[in-house]
Length: 321
Ligand code: G3I
Image (cartoon, rainbow, N blue to C red; front, side, top):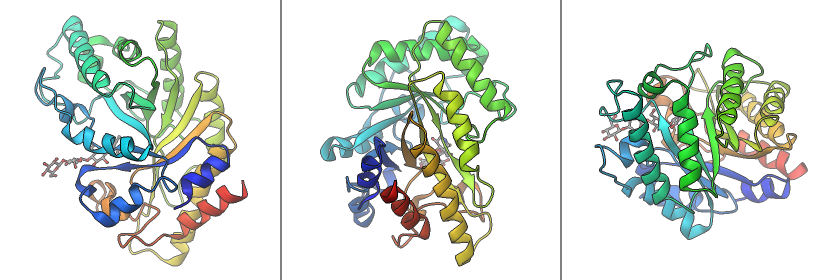
């Protein structure tokens, strides 16, 4: 493996991948996932989410999250922790029936326990995930309805108290291509949260996009320049670039390779961009076909663990950087 090795030589902190629990007993999968020269960083795709870590109120379970976190412990890979407060994969008891004080207590308890459990293990935490709709309006999540934007400020403050050494990130999708309403809303929110006294260290751009329609390197860099004025680091946290038409042609796969190069190239040329995480490395475990039937093959390796042109192109770009 070589992506992380080359990425580090090119000045990034890591090149990483998401790892989900169903793949852990697949030896072919694990051989590559644990290869530190390939992936210097891993992210649990589901195990640390609220529905897994606090499925009923006040009862915490860390089995799924630990299964992935333990890999990083053994290999020395960095762990990006994902995610503390998100509207999705949220148990039913976190409902909008709560008033501000009750919601604040629920969030406090959740973060103190979960970030406390993983204290010292996370390079970064995605403290709050996906707070906005694409039009830049706040998502009407249970947390937002109870507390307004204060739920974000509060989450960052509790995370900072609980695990002071980890980098605290805001993470979202469709905030890659400069510049849309969601990017403007994100910037305004970060300023509000910081002005209220909370520390935000990083902005994570997920980077889910479509072959042939993904942002250009210029568009990506313009966004990161704006985010860089607010926070100490930025990162691509969940990159995959899916084909919208299957099966693919050789030309489609070459286009996909070019699209990935825009992301990697933009990060390399942005001083505050610390790394790139792909949202799983093989099509075998990609979330795309489940969510977008008929689309997919978004990853760098195919289902049979063959490297695609996108892999080869990224490796040579990193090598020449
Ligand atoms: O655990 C249940 C299992 O018991 C059940 O039999 C099965 C039947 O569908 O579902 C399983 O839950 C699935 C879960 O993943 C665990 O594998 C859910 O259906 C499925 O919806 C869920 O999808 C995850 C998705 O987040 C949920 O929104 C994907 O694996 C995960 O890759 C995806 O990741 C998100 C990031 O966290 C945030 N950004 C977007 C990204 C892609 O959606």
